[in-house]
Amino acid sequence: MHSGKIAVIGDKDLILAFKAIGMDVFSADTQEEAEKLVRKLAKDYAIIFITEDLAQQIDQLLMKYKTKAYPAIIPIPSSQGATGYGMQGIKKDVEKAIGTDILFNKED
Amino acid sequence: MAEKLRVNPTRMELKRLKERLKMASRGHKLLKDKSDEMIRRFVGYAKEDKRLREDIEVDLANALTKFLLAKSVSDEAAIQEAVAMPGTQVSLKLDTANVMAVQVPKITVEESDSTEKYPYSFASVTAELDSSIATISELLVKMVELAEVEKTCNMLAIEIEKNRRRVNALEYVMIPQTEEAIGDITMKLDEAERSNTVRLMKVKTIIQK
Image 1 (spheres, each protein chain N blue to C red):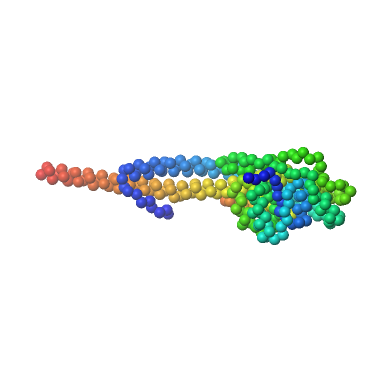
Image 2: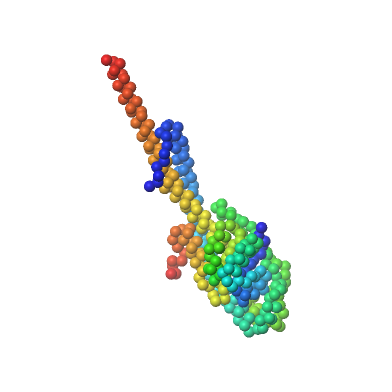
């Protein structure tokens, strides 16, 4: 079962910031590393935050975890700012559910 | 057009098909209502999700930039040491909520009993680090909230799609097929009845001669 812990996957520099407030951090630089980590952590952690650039690379794997309540794998921006991947996720959900995008079409 | 249903033209089969059509129409109506309600709720969650994510993306990126800045001005080892032993441990209370028969996560952050917000001595690091860590720990509750809402959105979207397929299957395959089969059987039965009547009339005239 999932414990009430939060994991963060990201590059080494970034994750220290999350470690300071008591999350468990794991560093990954490549796609393979990230995939391996997600598979391992998904069994144990309730929330996994993963930086957007890594999340984008392992998109396929993350789809697998979308149907169950736990773990929630959530992309977060890295220090370079948001790449828009996270927003894209919301947009995709809306399109899937409603057929067209009703939330975002005002802006772009 | 959907494939034609192969059925025996009997009264029993007709009765069975009529029952089935009734059931299918009722199911179709129910599923359609379910789909409407799910979409209504989903829109609420999606808006919330978007709002939270916008907030967090800005704040977190700022905090992380600050953190990197702090890291670059002080000694690498000092930072490593400063955060190596966190004074707090985040713990969450996990639960599931039921939104239109979808089991979605319900997460609350449990207050840790630690008094130390900063797990290091102020002498060894710069003020940027302090402020960035303060921001991140304030963001924590929001991030957990985002996790919950975004996951709910994900799951609802998947469920809505599944439900829509069911509705469509009923509306465009099951119901027309059954209706067609019922029509066929009725026609065959009427035909048989007519031919029976004609035969009787013929027999009657032969007898009367």
